[in-house]
Amino acid sequence: MIDLKSKKPIIISGPCSAETLEQTLATAKALADSGRVDVFRAGIWKPRTKPGMFEGNGEQALPWLVEVKRTTGLAVATEVANAKHVEAALKYGVDLLWIGARTTSNPFSVQEVAEAIGGADVTVLVKNPMNADVELWNGAVERLAKCGVKKLGLIHRGFSGYGSSNYRNTPMWHMPLEIMKRLPELPIFCDPSHICGNRTGLQEVSQQAADLNFNGLMLESHIAPDTAWSDAKQQVTPQRLIELLDSVVWRAEGSDSVAYQTSLDELRGVIDRLDNEILKLLSKRMEAAENIGRIKRENNVMILQQNRWNQIVERTLARADELGLSPQFLKIILEAIHIESIDRQRL
Ligand code: PEP
Ligand code: MN
Image (cartoon, rainbow, N blue to C red; front, side):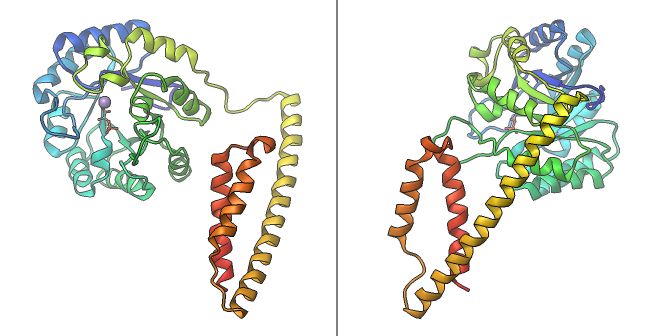
């Protein structure tokens, strides 16, 4: 099995599900021939949202992965969700196991999987849980490490949300950034396929991952995506996958160029000075909020004045264009200020 930190980017690709021996081998061959893929993925046990959907071929498809390995030389990966899956996958020499988002959400399942893997020589990647809970994600990694799993890594596949969005699962990039900070030694992959749920967003999300120092990508690819038995909308042909990979730029982590270092230091100086001013202004703003809180209290007036706040938000958002700031960003900033302001008025 390839060391996941030995080069960058590492590409894990293959169909959402291993549907038939032919589909599995044809997809694997096209991906291997491209020379761009390091690990072949295919789901054997599929966690589906509703019953009656294709739930994977189960153990009978494991020999297909063995055949992929024999004919292409690619390392092979599949998802495991319980001890039986682990035993079967290990029996067939699967190189890399991943724990799916639904499983990571359940500590009982993670514990069962961790105990079944134990000290086996296999790489295990942990997808983030469905819900945006970094502790749960971190906890799953800890359970595996405690049971003796040595080669560990992470997969960011986005978080489920409510309502319509361009994403199937919202990326919430601050979540992978937080887990990178906590577990800096673990390789982390981005799974744009499950974040997007469609083909159009894959390039942008892949580029974002490259820019945020991910170690590589897990992307679903299928020899005939439109006919796929699961996740048809988000899968791409091996050829399209290569075009997609060609379009993603993986930049260096730093540069020795003196000119670059000088300009960078200068610009960082500007940022540090501006941050300092912003913080001083915020401090003054909160002092003003405390004074308002005091006179409201003296006059027996309630803290929340919804109309006044609506006016501030409206006035500020109307200036978004002129300020060159996105309304979404301004909203987040204003909300944070408002929450703190209300808190300070209670003093
Ligand atoms: C998958 O990789 O096909 C899969 C089911 O992933 P997730 O657990 O991220 O939904
Ligand atoms: Mn899938």
